[in-house]
Length: 108
Image 1 (cartoon, helix red, strand yellow):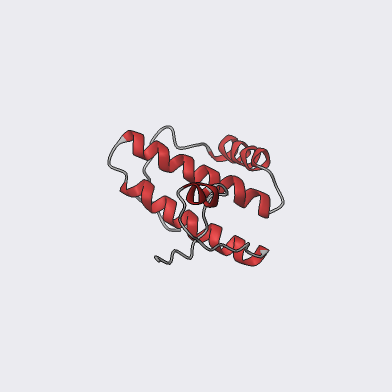
Image 2: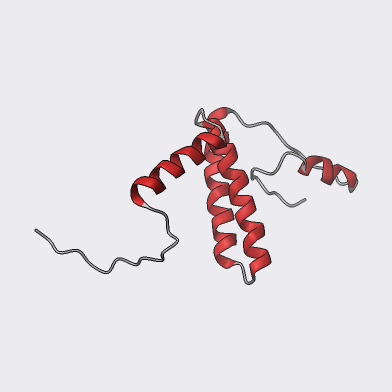
């Protein structure tokens, strides 16, 4: 039986059960959950970076967004709070729409 030892989406056990396969899960404590969400965010980011087409890229971005939703909750906020902070930062410092690439800044 393959060992996965990774955080999975909530309905994955139901999906596996529907196949008739045996499996084992456990519920993570808060500290483990945050650790595994961070690991999962790296995994999903790498999958986005490796995406070969637009459809795959969008799928991986959706997975990253799901992780961001979960992480915002464990940090005592909801996604709306994260979005508000994003908007404030964009208002103050701008976004990335203009594709500005900083080459160098003169030292004092």
